Length: 459
Image 1 (cartoon, one colour):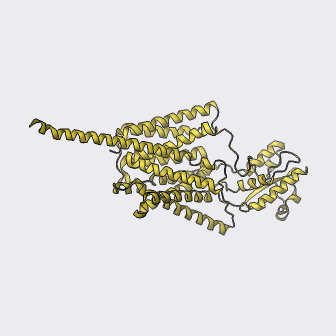
Image 2 (cartoon, rainbow, N blue to C red):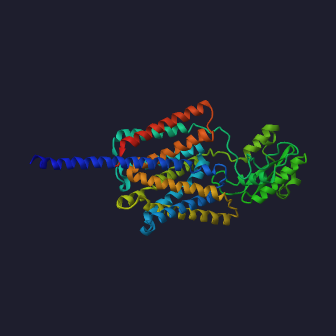
Image 3 (cartoon, rainbow, N blue to C red):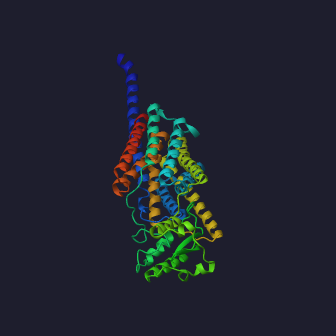
């Protein structure tokens, strides 16, 4: 009778061992998917690095069109089209599209370093707390919670360090043309050096974005005239007018004379206006530098602008932190379905919200008499395809690892990947101090990610 008594015990041990092996295999698969998604999210904007995106409205629509195409192909290949489109998952996609659109004014208001760091800070905190506390019904994070919380704190501390890392390296020229654009009316390099047609057009279009929101709007330009200056208002929504003005300016410089009122007929119709005394009295290079500072969009320093930027960071980062919750809840409610079942509904929600943003912006531009500048289609479309691939991998990783672990890895991982590209590929981070700060922030992120990946569990 003894062998028969031991048989149930052996079977229980065997089932327990199989469960452990299966759980380990799921964790490995989830980590591979999460790291693949981090790479995709980290390189998604590499195709657009040499292209102008202007105010970002058309860029985000082209990008979201690429996202929808990948989502449709995935649903077509896997047969998920028959499952329909859950409304909550579509809403999650709309939240991501809104969050993505908020990034542009956020960066313009707070700057790249502080703006992006605050955005990702909020995104990571919201995403981690949703899974850590089980908000919205998401499965609660399990494992060594103390070390997981410590890892999250280290990642957040790394964002603070990354704020002080500046990109001092040379930026690649923007297409069209291989040049660094200069503002209209800033003068020539010397007598007889007019700009090419390509450069003039690109300089005009590069200045279309409004200093705060990226919306085309009239902006007064100061054009030097001997010892004085004349102020004229060019419609920034009309790039043809700016091209013509810049060509007249360059032709005047090429003839060896300063561009005067006769070079800009619109100035005589508006009447001459004196520059402020401080700028008019600035001789030589100081005067040119003051003119350049007047033409280039200055970083907002007003308290209201900063508060608006913080509000956008809270909204954008918060929306991004919860945009995957509906997809996660759908997969939890349908454990027998594939994780790819939510990809097409999410992508459809992204495209629908993006189209609404574009149409609203186009209607406002029509009413205001602006022209909406169009960015290149191909790089934006490719970026969208890369993002959709990353989302496909991320949702699979979240299903195996849980929301806190999977989403945190895919919120911090892309920052690590993009910063590595910035350091070694584009060589934007230079100088001993900047590289040391970057290495310190990267090390904190790496340790935090490792702690969460090892000690966090969905089981």
